[in-house]
Image 1 (cartoon, rainbow, N blue to C red):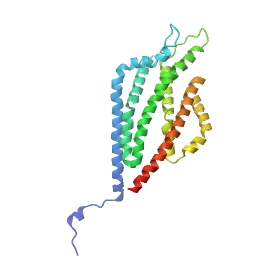
Image 2 (image 1 turned 60 degrees about the horizontal axis):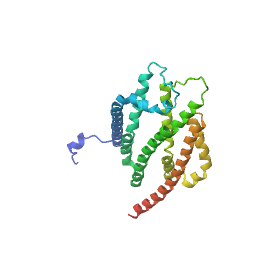
Image 3 (image 1 turned 180 degrees about the vertical axis):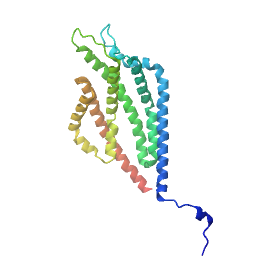
Image 4 (image 1 turned 90 degrees about the horizontal axis):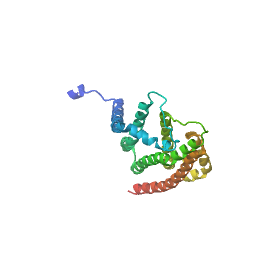
Length: 265
């Protein structure tokens, strides 16, 4: 009989489970490292922003303070509000600033699992989604806030002193920023639906009347109960939906062309 080499005697067989566990562990370690980088980026941004938290709050409240009657101002009804309101704002601004880096880390994690044509589309979509979110927040601050606050301060009964609470105001504007930032992502969502095959541009265009009604319903749910802010959210949502259909058609034509070239190679 042939003698078994010593290394074969001492070596332990590797089970299929061990082969399957290693990639999973590596992915989890990479995910942990990228999450730590995201948290570190937010902490660094917060450390830079926090010394200017009070100035940021004054800037954020400027659209309302400019419209308050002479002699009236904002107040803090909670003892801790003067501290926690600027602190909360600084944290939100830190996340807001770190969004490009956060999305870059997410992109770096998922990119190895994408095909070549998916990578070509995914990175521009991520970059565009960041830009659209910022545009939505800017639209809320520079266009919506002056109109909404002007409406609210003008319809109040005579003899009522308006003294907005700083914490309530912060919660309101953050909600509006989030609503308009997400609403401006509609073109990206539309393009992804078309490219994934879940629907087509023609089908979405055929459902346009329902989409218009849905935009006004969403505007009613996410904004204060006034026609101005509801319309200012619903109309851009509908316009962005139309842009999503347009760019979705262009992207849908481009992907088959690239697939054909790849197949030819």
